Image (cartoon, rainbow, N blue to C red; front, side, top):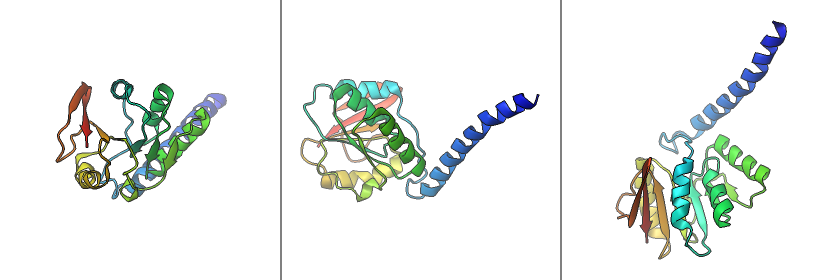
Length: 178
């Protein structure tokens, strides 16, 4: 009985610690993210986006609010493009850096608010953000994005822009070109 209890505790304590880290990370940035939580992009959506990007020549990619970096790692594995990501949630940032180290991928993750970043150097800008953040992001993209840049928005349309393509994979994925 004693060993069973120890076994259960040794399993539950790390899970409780991970959940606590997630909660603290979320609470620490809730005002800046306007309530948006760290939610991973599904594999189906990532595959659909990669299918669309496959014909692109070498491009410079950024993921705004990259979470654990799964999109960036998928792009590198399939297309060989080492993108960059911005993440302000400390828990998601830690996971992204850890997973990149463990996989040995040359992806750069910055613990910085992407509203403070210069987006003019990127050819492809991916984001999975809530509509109220997209309202703030749209003017920044209009001002900074270089001609020909592609924006990819998972789930929600980008205000003031007309998509050239919309894929229906679970929820819509919107593609825009400057």
